[in-house]
Structures are given as structure tokens and as C-alpha cells.
Image (tube, rainbow, N blue to C red):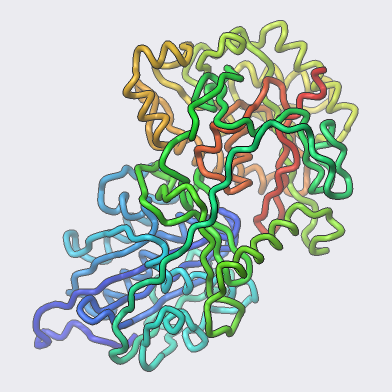
Amino acid sequence: MTGAGADPEAGPAREFVVEADGGSRGNPGPAGYGAVVLDAATGETLAEAAEYLGVVTNNVAEYRGLVAGLRAARELDPDATVRVRMDSKLVVEQMSGRWKIKHPDMKPLAAEAARVFPPGRVTYEWIPRAENKHADRLANEAMDAGARGERWSPSTSTADLDTGRSAGGRTATDGGARAGSGTGAGTGAASAARTGAPGAARPPAEPTVPAEPTMPAEPTTPAEPTAPGATGSAADPTAAPGASASDTAGTRGAEADAGPPAACGDATGTPGPAGGRGAGAVEGQAAVGGARSASGGSAVRGGAGAAGPAGPEAGPRPDAASQAAAGSGAPGSAGSSTTSQAAASADVRAARTVASPGWGPPDMGAPATFVLLRHGETPLTPQKRFSGSGGSDPSLSAAGREQAEKVAASLARRGTVQAIVASPLARTRETAGIVAARLGLEVAVEDGLRETDFGAWEGLTFGEVRERYPDDLNAWLSSPDAEPTGGGESFAATGARVAATRDRLVAAYAGRTVLLVSHVTPIKTFVRLALGAPPESLFRMELSAASLSAVAYYADGGASVRLFNDTSHLR
């Protein structure tokens, strides 16, 4: 990389602005990062870096972009001071030391970023996504190149031009000037940096118009099948994509399992607070937030409004309306895609995801299909008490065992389940055992499927928690990062755990249909992550005891929700 080095006679150290971003088309899915180094005084572009990373999460890609940007700045001047600007609230807050870093994938990346410059020489600032277009488009260019089996090339990049900047002469540097090493080694991806003479000062970013918010759905009867294979409320969860219908309305507005918290273990059915968790969607979670997705050169992710507190793995919480922002456009395009084009691209991608196999690419192969079974009732279920992984670990009641027998008979008739994996808690192992005996299968135990730990709230009703711990409850309802009283588990932490478990199981059971016997929060989280929905969506899902849901995971990182809260077998 060329540029201003650390010349001792060059006067005071320079100040740089590093803007970085990362994205994942599937979360986890094909991912890439982009980073740009600007002169803080003039706004001119000094260096760019981008790389396709293979299959990783949004947060990993964002951290990789940060590392690459800092390294590019250090190449320019190791004595410089740096102001990092990112639209990832997660990265900004964690690197500023205000949020703890709990996720194992984030810790080494954060430590790597902290080592590039001495402590105190780097500051962090959160910016709206509309002000981070340059890095965002670089990330999309890298992902587009990776999709074509190519390396990102600075010689063909239009990200700087699209944002109204000029980098002057461009120099591709595949070797010593590389801005950071890639986790995508072995994928054929590479990073590169470019430098140039002084160019145009940075113009103000164009505002991004948020899409209209989606209102909670009214209770409805099961929809008519929209694709071949749909069978209404008794649809086979392993049928062709698009055959998703539930016998109950699974989207009752702001509904919860034990009052407002939609993930209170065994309790079900009590209306929750209108508006769910408050300020907005969690963006780009490593394991828990709304997934950022893209098609072609257009990335689609959460909006960039005012961000409130979010979980340690959850990323920023922008405004509730999702925003579609144009990426780098089609390969070789010199202009940005319009918002309508991005929306159309997202619609096409969604249609392909839920289409029958005959509509999709012929080389996708059979998906890993998770049939998600919530355990049968326990004595705590009808009392609507918090029952997580830190409480009394109750067994099934007589009603719960009868429910398990009914679901076992239903699954036996369908004959599609090839393996069974259960949470380690007594009620899930007992439910799984009843089903396994009917299907002639063994039960594997997976700790990642356990219910959230509700701390001091275990065994209490929502009303009792409201009376004893009102402040803690309000905080928990307002932020996915908040923990129940007594050091329980936050929704952000649960989401991170579930996402990691999902990745392990998808790899272990590729092309197979697996029954996962779990609990309210994990099952809703599987569905939420597949949909790319924000954490507050947990408040808007009804999940009954012994209900069946299903999600299919494809080789390209895409997911298709096929069934939700089916209880037809219990009638």
C-alpha cells in the first residue's frame, strides 16, 4: 500500500477516520466486509479494503471489517490517531468498553482489533447506516465477487464513486498492502487496499427512507396452500417448502407465554405488552438479531435509527421499521440500486426460498429440516409460571404424557423423522423418550436446546415477578441484553446459544429430518432467526405445549419456515 507513512519529519501524526461494515447473506451465510480510511481533515479517501469471508455471521463480518480498516490505517501511518465510525452498535459499544463481550467468536476479533493501535489512539462512534454507504457497498462488492467465485478487485470497484468520493489513482495490492487477513482463507477470497491522491471532500450522506412498519397480524384461520405440497393445518412439517400452515394463529399481537415475556418457559397464552420490547429491531446479530440478507448487490437489513441498548451479541437496535438499502448493484455497475430495486430483489429471493424444489436451483440438495417439538405440559404450565433451566426441572404431568403420546402417533404416521435430539431438562427428555419409543430411534441430548435460565424468577408467575422485581422486569422487557433478577440468562445470550446450536446441528444432519425437542424460547428463536425478525417478535408468537414447528436449512445458508405451532395432532 502506498500513502503517507510514518515519516519522522512529516510533522504531527495524522488523524484518520475508519468506516467499516460487514454483512452476511443468511446470518450465518456468504459474507464479506468493507472498510475505507479517510483523511479526517479533508474527507478524502486514502485506502479501501474488502474481502469475501465465506460463510460467517453478520457480527463476525463487521468485526473483520473493523480489523481490516484499522490495519489499513496503520499501513498509512502507524503513529496516527483513528476515529472509527460504524453502524454496528454492537461493535462500537463493545470496543468502547461499555458492553461485555460474551460470544466466543467475538472475543478474539475484538482483541485483534485492540492490538492494531496502542490504547487511547482509537475512538469509536456509532453512525446511522445511511452514513456508512461507502463501507457497506464495499462489503457487498466483496460478497458479489465471492458469489461469482472471484476476488474483490479495487480496479473494478465503484463504491467510492457511488458515494461521491474520489480516491484518485487506484492501485490494487494483493500482497503486502492487504488490509487484514481473512477467515475466508481457502475460499479463494482475498482482500485488497487502494490508495490515491487527494480527492473530493466527503459529501453528506443521502437519507435513507425507512420502509413502512409491519403491524402484528390479526388472528386468522389457516391460509390456503400457496405452493405444491401444502396441506393446511395438518401440513407435514417435512413437506416441500411453501407447505407451511398452522392450525392456530401464531402471530397474535404482542402475546406472551407467561404474561408479557413471550419466552417464560412453560406458561402460555397470557396477553403481553403492546409493542413488545420497545425501541426497535436488533441489527446484525451474531446469534440473536434480525439477520441481514442480500440478493445480488443489494443488502437488506435493519434500519439505522436511534439505537438503544442491545445484547452483547445482538448488535444495534435501530428503529422498528426495516430499511432496504441499495448495495453495489450488478457486477460492473457504476451506480447504486434504487430502494425499489432492492425491495424487488428481496421479494424474488424470498419467493425462491419458499418455493417448491421444482422452482429452486437443481443443485441445492435436500435441506436439513428441523421439526421443533415443544415438550408436553408440566404441573407449572397451566399455572403460567416461569420454568427455565435454572429452576426445579419438573417432569411431565399426566396431561403432558398424554400429549407426548399423541404427537408420537402423529409423527409415526408421517414417518419422516430420522433422528431425535432433546434438551437435557427432564420434561424434554421425557417427551423425546415417548416419541423415540414409538419411532424406534435413539435420543441424543444437546445442551444448547435447553430453556432460558430465568434466575430468581423461576417458579413465579408474571404477576409475582412484577410485584417483587418491577425495575428488573421493566428492564428485561425493554432490552434483549437485560438479565432476569439474580443473574439469569438474557434473550441475547439465549439467541447466541441457539444460533451456535443451530449451526452445529445443520452441519451434523445435512439433508436429514431431525426432531428437536425443546422449549418455548429456543423454538421461537429458531423461527425468529430463520425469518430475520427482531427480538421483540418473540412477544408476538404463541407456542403451545406439545406443538410442532419446522424450519428447513439449505446449502446456500437460506432458511424456510414451513410450519409453526401446529397442534392438530392434539385434537
